[in-house]
Image 1 (spheres, one colour):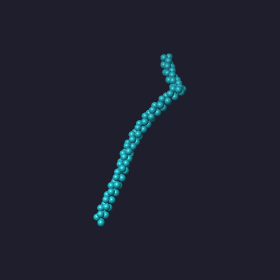
Image 2 (cartoon, rainbow, N blue to C red):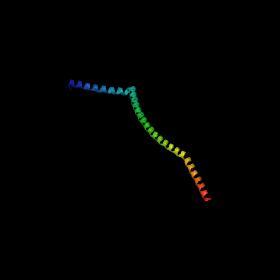
Image 3 (cartoon, rainbow, N blue to C red):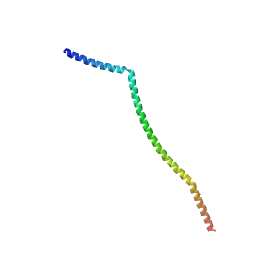
Image 4 (cartoon, rainbow, N blue to C red):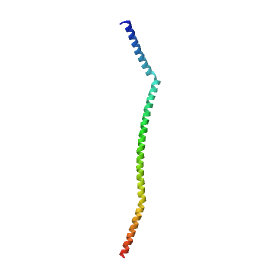
Length: 107
């Protein structure tokens, strides 16, 4: 090997060694790793929060639709309940009237 080749080999070795040292330093830097993990968890949590909010809004809309439907049924039921005494009274009047007419014809 010639002197310039040896010099190039030394430079390549220094670069690889520098990269290795940087990697080891990054692994040893617990604070930086904790910050990175914290940022990752924060992003994941925010994504879940958005997903859950959308799901809750969908459920709320669904429940509102069901409540509207039930409310309509209750109103219908109340209207039927209000009409029931009127219908029973009318039937009673018709029955009494029929009985009176029937008794008059009989005598």
